[in-house]
Image (cartoon, rainbow, N blue to C red; front, side, top):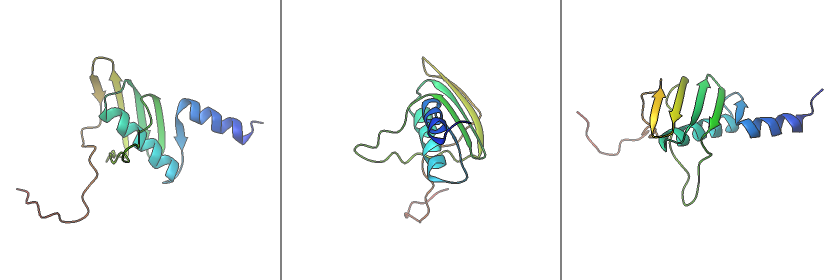
Length: 106
């Protein structure tokens, strides 16, 4: 039987996280958004709480925390060297505004 520490080491090594709406899941999704936003080569899959990332990087939170988000429950992205992106995600990485900032939209 595998020990918990071994499973944690494996999930860190391969950047696999499977949790229910938890801090770890949010961090895994933030790492995928960061990697896709910066066009870092890798394979990214997210499906209702299951996140799989090969390549990319975790967000560099210095001097500020990366605010980007993926506004989709499911998706697949393949970012190749040379900035070639194949993805099912067509949204923005900007956090959604929750308050009225006074800007008008048409």
